[in-house]
Length: 456
Image (cartoon, rainbow, N blue to C red; front, side, top):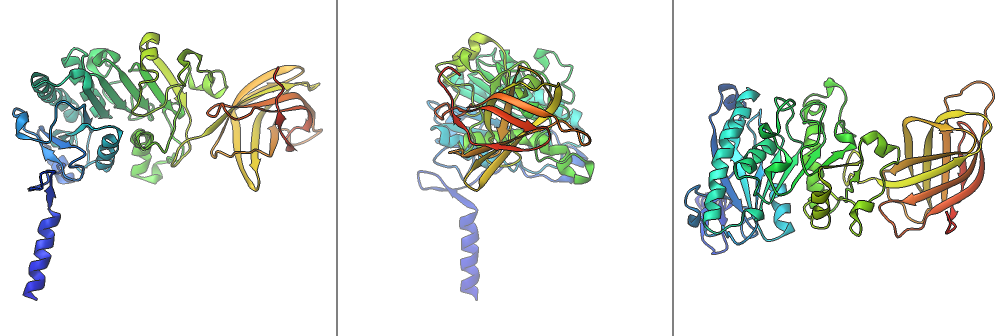
């Protein structure tokens, strides 16, 4: 029994130790874990910097702010990414921290530093946490200046800020005169920043390149454009799958806001390919008016994620750019998009919404283009964006229904002179067409697509 107890104790000690690449055992430095009582009493700011590299992904090492050489794993010749969390009303560590650290290390051999300012961010009074962002930014600015003095290049520094952390990153960038290589803002915080001037929030001048993802602009996120490129997922506000009533509890408040982190993680993991289309508004995007990427050729449209090399210079030349994309409610989030061009020749004017199904064998996927009513009349060209939750290949048949809301009386005929489907994310796939289709309103018609003629 005594021997068994000693073995268990030894096992616990091993689990509580980390091992660096030199083989020496050292205690891991973990993110500060607080609880609600700390938030109720209030916390004073204390900033810790936890280093992770490919050699110690499972065991953080705290770095001395003033003695960089004390941490042998910190190689200043490598790029350095700083991960900055936001407001922590419960004091618990962010559940996404370790996942983001690991995915960043997969992108390239870099230093990943978690900026742990939980003591400061964990306050019941949000206003207190906002004030601390300036002080925390001053602290981090000094550390990065020490890095530069030791030989690091500011252009190789990437700050990734979540919510309130996005503005903290912007303050650091402003302190360093915009010489930081890149700042990524994941749904920058809105409360207390909605009327802020550029020097009081994240803005494009804070770094050589600033990219921003919006998911909750009508609540905890910040509306508007604040980077060289701003990605708006599902218009930047309400996200699919998130609850719409307060009866859902905590999820009702945080789901849309947290979706920015989940989308970014998915993009880093390369399981999502989320293409943004430049457009002046989300409604224009849904209308299919902004599905061209001519300004970015020969590169494709901007894709959310880590690698921005293909289109960064184009964006810097274009100035501030807004791009829109839609997602599903869950992994892998990606929708498959078709531009659909319809020419109608019906005798009577009809208004309706459009439902399209694509079939491949026994599988099918549906797009509901019901964000507005479409005008269908004699020789009218209508363009719309049909977005499907599943990527089906080898489409064998297509069904189409035009819902006019007419439930009594005579069903009017609708004649389609031509309908054409253009796959947007897969330009290598053939265009699908069909000519002269006669259908009734509110009734589904099924047809087999044919290859489009070259002049279409």
